[in-house]
Image 1: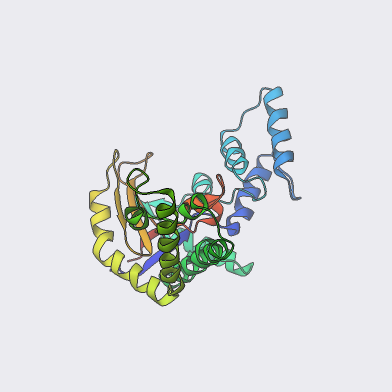
Image 2 (image 1 turned 120 degrees about the vertical axis):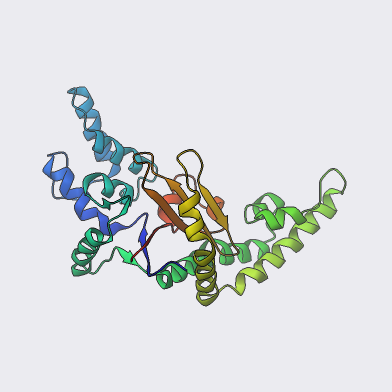
Length: 267
């Protein structure tokens, strides 16, 4: 397994103070809280005056995906802070930010145990409980299929060879079986899956990741991916996330609700 794996959330409100301070320093935003509508008006006013700020443009468009939540993404923080060193994330520099965040009751650095708990809560909130409600209320085929992954689709009766009644009944049975498998998910099982995935695939991912194509592995509960950064031919970015459930999140909100972590090896 990765030696002392360190995880950093892709979306984390703990990044907000640094992002906002940077925009305040540039005299784009002030001290108070802003809404997306206000940010939209600011950028329209800047355009009218012929003023362009590349970072604020990225910040604004990330915010536009989910107006209710400020765009507190690690990808934005990396633009304004020197958080890379020798072809990988600089854990020492990130640790200093983490120490600041903890003084506010927040944090930036996480463990695989934290991620396992996070993934378990995600599965319960977005898959197990909603699927149970949908089965109880007699949801139609279209709604149930949203929960299916490759294994479930593989078992689904074909429309061309089976009657609609048989197809509907088959989908209901598969959905009930899926619900039973979701109900036995635990933080402990996910943690073991994370450990196994990293042990077998982290080093492979780092070695195989290229600028054109990355490395991807999907297990029962988690998925790991690795790819070369567009900005550097040396920096390999590795992500850890749940292996299912992304399609159940409303478009544009995946970044906020789908728990995704940057993964780094702290030597």
